[in-house]
Image: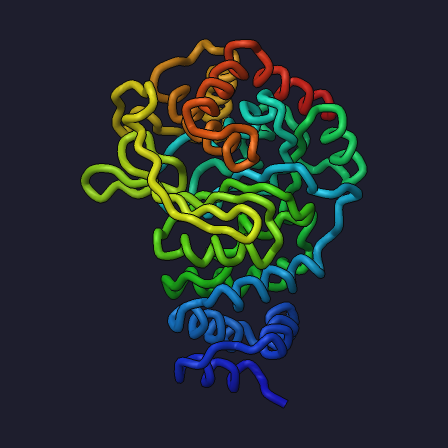
Length: 344
């Protein structure tokens, strides 16, 4: 029987993992008694070789099988999130988008965590807003039913990941990324029909599109934003072209979102700077209650428009932009936040 060292040797020689090898390696990775060094070597070898869509899907399915299952289906629901890792230092755009999109009538099942590469992750800013991030699965189902949105806190739904924490720390000490830097946005245990996922690395876009299809997403967009001077972000960019790989049923296509085609104000990355959870919570609420306008609102409205399109609620970005603006101006976006806060 092969062990992790054998599998690492296979990967280092350029070989891909079979479905059986993925299951076997998964058992080793989640075994707290396995050597941290051997597990880190395996993940580093896999990442150096380059994860194939089949390997990413295999690991995602393996972790989903071990996850806590929410008592509701993600059918007709959207997740909006990003890989992180872009080091842009923005406020929590996708978490703000969650409420704007919900206010536009899209069911939102957001799966997320505390900040890893930022001062404030989605869970941190929601907590600062008075949202319970540790709702039980039944309470999350009630929130989704009554508020139109809910948040699934990743550590509560993926207890198996605790066994991998020392391995990820070892990889971080080496300065090495791994498949865990890729799969986070794909691990929503509700298995939503729709998704908007921002990725930090444009070479991951075709992988994400392929994995979306393998996971059965009805419609999904993977996006990577660009801008001047090498600017890169795991969001739809307000200052440059955004590369999009989309899937819809069995079809896939690639296109570019040009922010100049929408009425965005001129801005620079510094206009979107965030801070700690409390700072970002004030920005989020300010956008939702319309007391903050200009670049922060515009980038949220832009990304919410993409989410609305990904949820198949608009035929084009202009129509979706208008829907996102109406969600804020009508008070529906703020009400979505207040509805979720009522479950505290």
